[in-house]
Length: 407
Ligand code: SF4
Image (tube, rainbow, N blue to C red; front, side, top):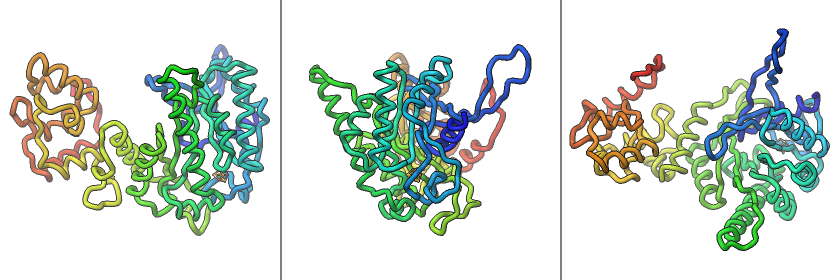
């Protein structure tokens, strides 16, 4: 329990999953179970199900000294390491008790990259071959580890991730001098190549082994350096295009150490900035946006006032209003307030009859936003297409209000 407490607490800065964060002791008679704030996190499967994962570090003993990290070698924190068999047994026992559906395993670098990756591999072997565990496993690929080791792990895990940490070599050199940009990119490249090979073999119907079927992901820290949103998002765009990245996670910097190269220890995590980056990232992945659409006129940061899609629309007002009964899907999904689901509904419904304003409301779009940018059967319902008017209305809409069933 002590090791579990230390190593699950140390894992909380990795944001690929978020901790359940609830602590509740069983006090009353006749009650069933306790809730612990550490160890279990939640993530989402591709079909939208929320699944619980045991989220732990294999060890928090680290030979590296990344200045932003709570586990860095020179920090005086309680240290612990799990043996491979302990992690495997914990996972199986938790699974049997129905606490978890899978494992999210990360690690500090205890002796060397290869020694750490070898232990991760041992855990995977134990789980898959000895205990025949068929649940979800996400493991870290350790920068600097041999490619053969990474490859062997990839055939046993569902997802692998290598944290790029910062968007530029310069920032990485400043905050994590022992980590080399090339040693982070090398395993990403290896995972991508193997993944493509496995997909080609599957298509060719030859015997193939599943390699990280849930793909690879990475994480970037936001606000620990001067790196702009532009640098962060163009780096993410590059990783999506070049390394078949499934997800880039953005982690608002939480100050845990004092250092001359870091923001002050009193700095609050830039959560709104993180949120806007996630929104922009969503547009890159699912809405055919490019970073040029998001950073208009050479801007380096994402507007915190307006969400990125609204910001794009306000800066391209000459493209609106769009007639919903004629626009193709690519254009419909560019309208603020219209997502993929409502755009598809619009297309389906208009095959039967042209949509009027009432019919548009029923497609599930956010009409409070969409109405300034569309016409229905040629009629505009947004009162005024003046940019300042729309901005004012949007900002008023952002104020919190009691949700209504009928609004
Ligand atoms: S390698 Fe760096 S970021 Fe990872 S645990 Fe060690 S000090 Fe922390």
